[in-house]
Length: 257
Image 1: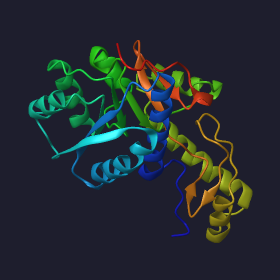
Image 2: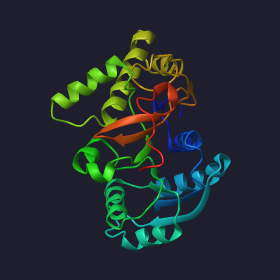
Image 3: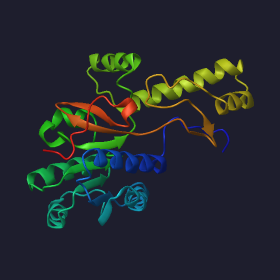
Image 4: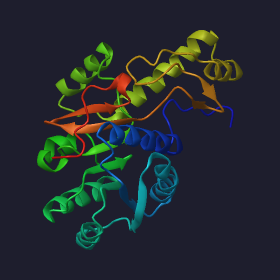
């Protein structure tokens, strides 16, 4: 499929970054976390990501003691919360879609389940709206996801434009924006709309990532090898990058108070 290109990472590479970042965060705090329970939705997204995390986390000194699969939709997480409470796992790792992500987070708080951190991978409900609507639930939760570079003036300017229009600055905005930039750049460099010429221009793209926390754009089999996911945390009503360090806008609160 030589005419298919993706600027952002897929879940395989995101799982790798999630494991690496968690290892770094845990080590910087003196390695208080030892065990992880993964709560994932039942489709290929949740099951596939969970299997990758189960394989990768031990490489960073973390043992997965349980993998709990749930259906879509799930309307009640009381029993799951009680299981997690009994396990006394250090880290709860949700991998699910928005409805279940938010319901699980609320249930864990309501059931007063104690753990060092909620560290999700592609958490469907983790965004500015979640932090705005449920600040007490969201505070100190961590997710690994697509994000923008908060150190970039262009990124902050675009966020202000979106928020001035009474909208939330979600990843759909900046990922779509950069995908259009990628295509525009290819047309400009190709100097034509000829199909093969544009495909060649896309394949050889070295576009500046602008306000994404990426390295230089470089495609291999249609995947941008310069892309990466980052670990983000809800802190005091905002969302901060906490890892990797070159893009971090705040220090991790880990373990949570």
